[in-house]
Length: 106
Image 1 (cartoon, rainbow, N blue to C red):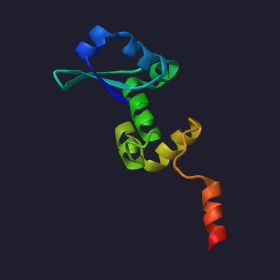
Image 2: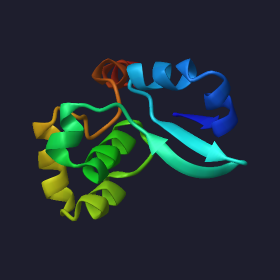
Image 3: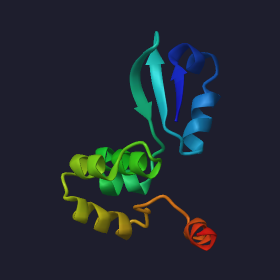
Image 4: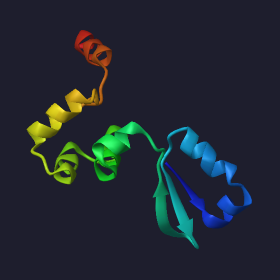
């Protein structure tokens, strides 16, 4: 996620287009104060709704916890984990190979 000021976007609009093309979330500011957020327009936003899509992306990027995601989606943690599984979004962030290596070290 990046932050761009209105003046910077006015001078070089390609920087914003580049961000959208690469599916980055961008916070747009005016005089240093957040004004809005840009997101790329894709089927996930249409199918899942903007709030839900942003919440899922924030979880996927490690910005919010499972509990916070469940709260935002108005689901239980169990229901949220089922949804994440259906969307192929990992619930945990670790590599099995790292865990097996740690077991070998023990």
